[in-house]
Image (cartoon, rainbow, N blue to C red; front, side, top):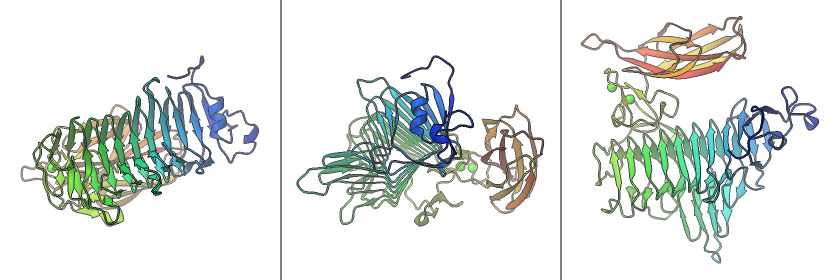
Length: 494
Ligand SMILES: [Ca+2]
Ligand SMILES: [Ca+2]
């Protein structure tokens, strides 16, 4: 906690398109025009609700704040206009940011987001969820660090269900300066967790020294159910890590070299910290080695690789690894889910689960091959036999359309529930609603199927609604039925 108010936490409102916002008080129905006005008015612990719009601002969070993009990341944009870092989390602050796109920053350090802590400050914390950090550039004549995000020492950062893409850390190509660049997507000197995220298309380049097109990390680093693809680094290092590393159920693919250079390793480890790679896919990275210390399998290393698919294999500590095509659905067009006959389905490790969902929202452990044994898949995505999408008008009396995709011919059922929850239910997966709250279920035909659902006119606005489907497979020889739960779709009736 940096600054605390003496009253209860307050809510503030921002809407750039609201009439009269220039003289507003920031209360409900009287929103400010800018986030800076709301940050100035708020006290530590307050929450700022931001309506859709593009806010051309460079923000400094100098107290504990919660920023909420009310309509989500696609519609709520903070644009730094290349006028420095877009969002700075000041030393000692605890901040949460949910539902924003943060873009177009330009600075030496942390162009999109800078978590500006130090060994001399109190712990600085950021949770970034359901957000996108894109098209930011760290540039320096000397050392550029953290194109998308830079987290300095003594920070604790959680990235959750977010996308970090098309950011860059660049040094000058001028021969006069021996420039360096680290962390095109993210530079971490604190403690970083990246859960159910996508890192794609970040770059790093400089004259003298450069590494970590996706992530350059010297502190504790945890990555799970995350896709890390299409990065460009002169020596092929998508991730460089010298601290303790846990990399689980993630996909590293199509990370590339700068033209004409030869590669080392897509995951480059240094130092003696333990590194665990479990349940991952490392494939088609255009490098000579997959995981390594330059050179790979340095007997002095401290890495263990288990239940993973590695192109080129692995000769170090660990077991149950394979070297065969993962059968992505369509990697060239950005679809890194695996096909039903992939060797990665139900082939992950039995013991280690750090997220409840795969990237894309399916339960993290599903019985993909319908043999009634629920096993996590290798890679960032979990193959499921049923997927639910909802479109339409989630209003009292409105109608929504439910699109049930999945394995043709399976029997589908649907649950409509009123409170979120999380309960693993072997062998079917995870229920994402609370069984102790009201819910009802009904038959939903045969996959694939489309159904219309009318929302009762008596449902009050603001009511949360969770929809989840399940698929029932053909009976096994012992008469038992295989089951899969789908992703959950969470609606708020407005
Ligand atoms: Ca599975
Ligand atoms: Ca199975």
